[in-house]
Amino acid sequence: MLRLAADENFNNDIVRGLWRRKSELDIVRIQDVGLSGADDPTVLEWAARERRVLLTHDVTTM
Image (cartoon, rainbow, N blue to C red; front, side):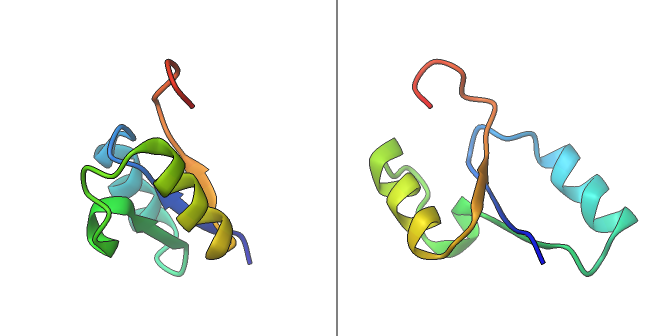
C-alpha cells in the first residue's frame, strides 16, 4: 500500500477528507511524528527513511 506523509504546508482539510473516504489510508502528518518546524531536508530525509511519499503545497522550496 502507498504510504503518505503530509507536511505542515499541506491542507489539513484534504487529509481529513481522505481519511473520511478511505479510513485505511496510511497517511501521517509531519506534526504528528514530532517534526513540527523541521527544515525541508530533515522532513525529506525522514520521509525517505520511512518510505513515504511526501505531500506538500510548498512550491517554493520543495
